[in-house]
Image (tube, one colour):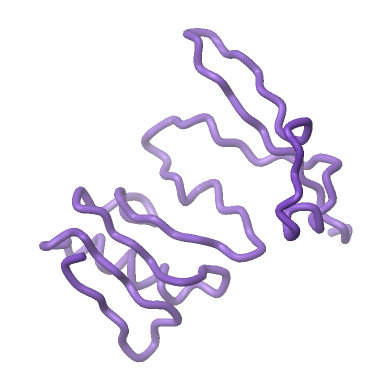
Length: 123
């Protein structure tokens, strides 16, 4: 690790393996370090650079939340958010079974995995 930043106003520290972080990426990392659902720390990998809302090469852990947009809008990874029938309590206990995560083979041989999750309270 190259450096750690923990200043007033940040909820969690920023730990970086990137020696010279772009100013825009640093602003994004600081915004993430203030986010109410993020846990432990914001990590910046050696290839870190400014992204759309979150630095490319940034790594976060969210508590009780799924943030598909944190993956980035420029990589086309195939993540989706769907409403399903798995109660949220099953996620909290880390007790998902292989049947909860179906696989579908897409063209070009890539797999698309969709986690079926449902909220317990209606919105």
